[in-house]
Image 1: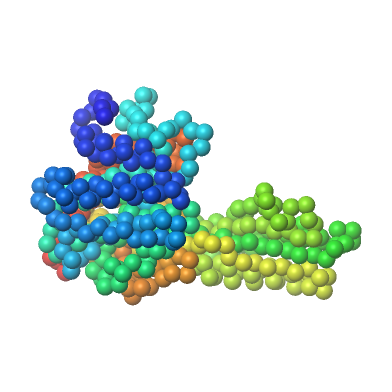
Image 2 (image 1 turned 30 degrees about the vertical axis):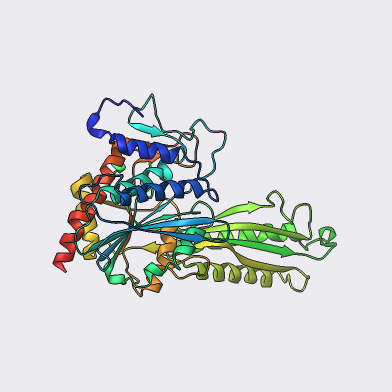
Length: 430
């Protein structure tokens, strides 16, 4: 394919364009990732067979890992020294479904901004997938290092791919002090100056459902709430208490509590004043998932007691809604993160540590999901470093999604330098 652009220094190679165009051309919404996993595996098998020419051939170890019973699978590809320091790189292959969007399943250049590439999922995160494929095909992994690239499914929905990966036998022998986890996941949006933003922490996310039951006839009684009224009191009380805690608790200012839904379509509570409920979402920073659930249950119980709801026959429940993610943060002062910082400075001219846009599979890599332990617990390394730096782009999950071409090229340069220069220097200095 040919996409002309007046700045050849900022262009991807024709091969990189071809791969990115193929990835964008595959519809891969959550639950429908079969074709894109087959495409990536096919490219990796072509490399192993010699059909893709590499400067120095290093055989890939390719593993297809089943996810659930629906025929879906993760793809795990390893290259380099089997016993070496592990650089684990993660990308999710699914996207949100395409709506009535102007973007199509085809890579296109924005006529008004020729540096911008458009297409469904191009920013979140098919450009990142292409970056990791290019690394696997072209980087000569130095002695003493192994790269483990994970192409996971279902990030945009329930993280079932990451849940399955946490049972992968290949991670059982990893050591927390011999591991760096990275991802070209989207880190920032907008201006080219965002290139070099490095996510060193991400909010967690806890979703809960509050259900209120009231006896029949309460809607006719004065000073006694029906379920809908009691539910409103609960929401107002939780919001007020949360605001009070945020205002008093140093370091909690980035936490958020929002109403995710009230009487949604198909709700069992609709048109029933004897039962009501709401869904809440708490974005976590200092608070864990378990603490968030305990806090909400405690506050609703306190309200119920003060209002004497039990004596009036009003009952309540507060329960967790899957999927939940704990907050993660990385110690950026560690020697290996100094290597990441130096590489970013050398490639982008800057390294700006930022809070990630929203919870992602990296949260689950750190602390687990769906009851599965994350790598920090499994490997006994609470300080296992995790970072993310991705391309510059915007409008993810929308019909006008775009990514900067030059930022993708720079990102490939960054990860190549990290693997071939920065990490070897770090290992040598240990």
